[in-house]
Length: 402
Image 1 (cartoon, rainbow, N blue to C red):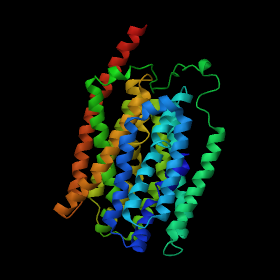
Image 2 (image 1 turned 180 degrees about the vertical axis):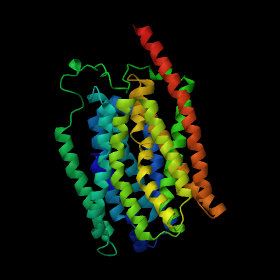
Image 3 (image 1 turned 90 degrees about the horizontal axis):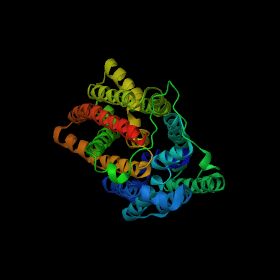
Image 4 (image 1 turned 60 degrees about the horizontal axis):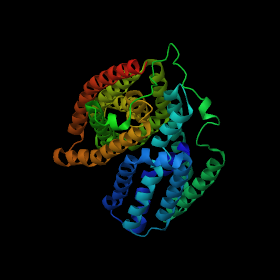
C-alpha cells in the first residue's frame, strides 16, 4: 500500500509540472496550488482520524482512501483547467491520509506487540522503493507526447485499483484472536516504550502536549521548506544539473534505509536518542547546504547533504506514530496520531512559501537555511523537556495503576 500510494501518487509529482503546464498553457504558480490543496486537506482530515477509524475501522478507511486516490488520478487525466487540478488535489490529500503514514501507525500499533519502530520503519521505507519504480515507469509515458501525462495518470489509476482489490481480499481489521494478543514485556535490550497511556481528554489538558504540537509543526516547516528548495539552491550555486540529479538519486536510495534505521534505533535506544540523532543531523545538513559553492568542497557538501538529509526526514514521517505511542500511550493513540500528522502537514503548507519569500527578499536561500537550523536547535532543546516530562508522568501513572 505504501509503495504504490506514496510511490506512484506522490514521489513522481515533479515530473508532471512541465508537461501539464505546457500542454494546457497553465502558469506554474497557479498549478502549484494543487499541492497546497492536498496539504490543507490532509491537515484537516487527520484531525478527525481517531474518530473515523474508531467508527469505521481501518479496512473501510483504506478502501475510501484508494477510491479517493483513483478519483484524483482520473480527474488529473481529464482536467483542462487549474480548478479541476485543485479538485484532484483535494482527493489526493484525502486518499493519502487514509493509506499512508497515519494509517500505517494505527495498523502496526494494533497488530504488533513489540519492535513497532522497526516494523513501521520497514513499511514506510517502501515509499522510496515505490518512488524509484514509479519514476522509471511513468517517465517514458509522460514524455511520449504532448498529452502523455494523461496516459500516465490513467495507468496509475489502474495500478491503484488492482492493489486495492488485493488489499480488500487479504487485509483484516484485527488479529484473528485479538483477546489472546498480549503486549509482551520489552526485551532487556529494548528501549522503546509501550504503555497503556492516558485518555485523550486528559492528554489535551497537559502543557507538554501543546509544546509537542509546536515542535512537530516547526519540524514540518523547517524540513519541508529546506528539502523542497535544495535542488534549486544547488543549481543557483552553480552546480551542474546532472550532478544535482545524481545527488537527489542518492538521497532517494538511502532514504528507505534510514527510515528503517530510525525505527530500529528507537526500539534499541529509545526516543531521546533517536530524536537527538535525527535532529542534530538536520542542523548539520542545513548548515552544509548553505555553504555549497561550485567547487570541490562545495560538491562534497552537496553529497553529504544528499546522503544525511535522509536521516533527518523520518522526523516528519515515522516519528509521528512513535511520538504518539511513547509520549501518550495506547488509550489516546489514534486521536493523537491524527493530530500530530495534521499539525506536521500544516507546517509543510507554511514552510514552502516562507523560504521562497526569504529568497525573494534576500536573493538567496542561505538566510532561510540558517533560520531553519536555528529553529531546529530550539526544537532539540524543547524536546528534551517534553520527553522528560512525559516519561516522568508515565512512571507516576504506572505506579498508580499498580
